[in-house]
Length: 79
Image 1 (cartoon, rainbow, N blue to C red):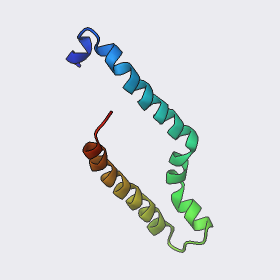
Image 2: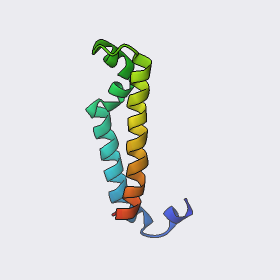
Image 3: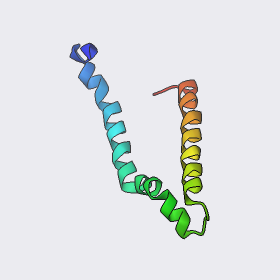
Image 4: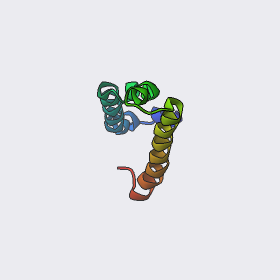
């Protein structure tokens, strides 16, 4: 937090902050949170017999995608 008090630090952080906020807003409008929250109900309606297992599979896929994405971002670099 102390680095934010340095001259020019706020200007330097403006663009990344805008990008992050835009992505967060787009995520809310995409509805992915509702899909994850209601995954077991959606899978139950689709005919999956074990809704809890289906929800667990969805969450596991999300976890794997995040686990693969983090090192990829580190390797390719943040811009």
